[in-house]
Length: 261
Image 1: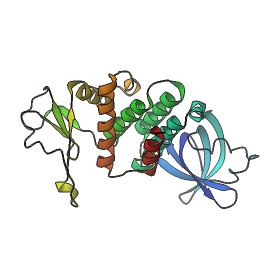
Image 2: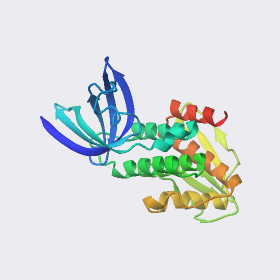
Image 3: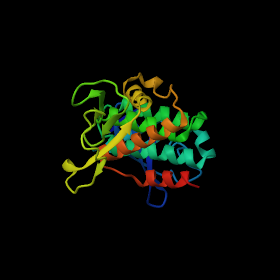
Image 4: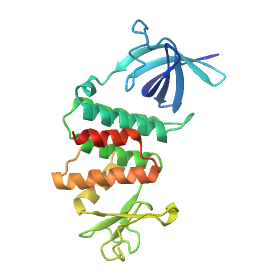
């Protein structure tokens, strides 16, 4: 039996038996791991608070044969501000759910953990627009997990800037207005290799996308866009991550419903 101690974020929780939970933890060094938290549903249990979704804690676990059991935990951050807004909480749960889908076990997930924690902090402790925070998370997440789009220049002629560029969502590349072709913006297909989604990008939106995928991790939220440009930016980021990961999560659908209330 091995005893491990590490900081981790609870990105998923599932009731297991009468009084236990199965926790999916995101760690920097060990990637995504599943831990059995015995008695965690009881209000008297010492680990009850740390076993809640979106809590960041120092966990001590016992490992035997590839299975992990929670021994003790010490709370680091609860992101209490998320409890005051349904939409911000929904966005936070969505971000954690995305991490649960794209992160893997026994892998260095330090960059992804940092991204999720920064996103939760922005949602919990600042008044920045929720859609904007979510969009920045989505595009940076795509970049971190290997779906970084090539936005430096037109994939056809090499032109770096134009009055209007177009993002080829499926191929992760851009084309200038001269090379865009027949103007077809979307084509559904059973064979994903022939599907086509093209999104127009203004210079401001393209600049924002380039900034998000290329800036230092602690600076990803340090920019602003006018409302009209921000709306386009948010639409592009969501569509890009959903199509690149081939996952449209129920937590995303819930967030989009909540926005309309």
